[in-house]
Length: 180
Image (cartoon, rainbow, N blue to C red; front, side, top):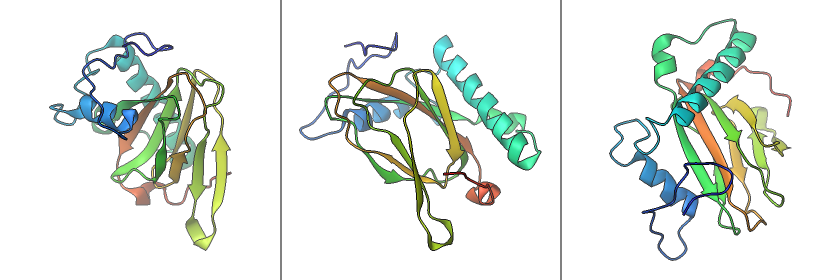
């Protein structure tokens, strides 16, 4: 079945077991046999545009905070995947992205009733959190060590987001001043 709001995003062949999260299963389908690449979308022109947009966002963020460019080898290692959820089926518990410096989430759609992306900075023994309610077409960039999650959605529509990681070490971005 096609997911409304993003042409070409198909759920065909994704078989769910009772209680399984459609987003988790869909992620597994994307990385099966990919050898570090997104086997399902890697050749798609739309997907390539997404990778370029995330690389541009990563580059401008890195230049802004560290006055340093992203190298060509780093650029070629950016990994992206789609997340799909709906009918209260989307829930991502708090997590981080190890072995990555920066993460980005692009929202081609954000149906009414979708839960926000919650970012939590736990440095210094304090917890500062911030909810992001993105507009369709918006990309959110943050350090990969920032714990983040999406609570269950209260929407009947499919909520689609694309995530990308810039590989690297957390220590590279540990001094970023976040305004959460």
